[in-house]
Image (cartoon, rainbow, N blue to C red):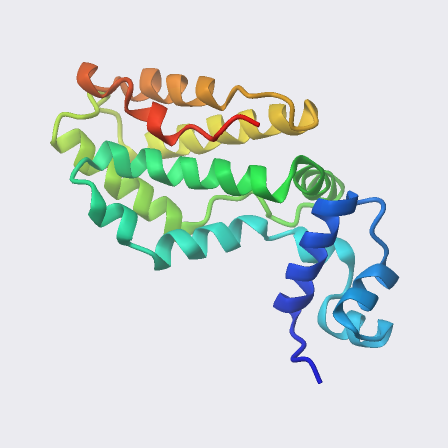
Amino acid sequence: MKHISKETIRTTTIELIRKKGYSAVTINDICSACEITKPTFYKYAGSKDELILDLYDTTIRELISDPYHFIETDSSFEQLLYIFSKLINDTMAFGYDLFSHMIISNLQEDHHSIDMRDSLTRMGELIIKKAQEKGEIKNTNSPKLLYNALAHLFTGHELKWCISNGHSSDFEDFFKELNALLDVRKDLLNSYKQYLPEKN
């Protein structure tokens, strides 16, 4: 018998949604793909919505648990670029339909899906502080204020991407606005280009 957990059901559900679209995937589809009964699904998952409400947490766990990309570069500013490129790439991999429904679900009832996550916030603030100390970022406002502004800027671009059904490619604009907001040192202004998602 297959090992069943909420995480295995979530992974299967996300794959089905990416292939068929959120509305086209039924509980029966999920049960069939997982080889479980409906009672088992409800025991572990509760609902289809519940499985998509913490998509960010998967990405953040990966960021926190894999320090390789942070050790790889001495530039604190590039470490910050990596964080946002990881968020962008994972958002695109999950797909606009999935993220759109996560947002809709939170508009109906606040599930805190897009709240700031303490672990990533602390990391972002520390990286900004180090980048300020190195002179990579010239904006001297508090790292907390700057990170919050960047997080909200990112969410705005993510929403635009969802509204355009994934056709908007303005994540480059996000990085340019990040440069402007942080007042990035001139020689680092084009660093973001290596972190842009590949265009389809």
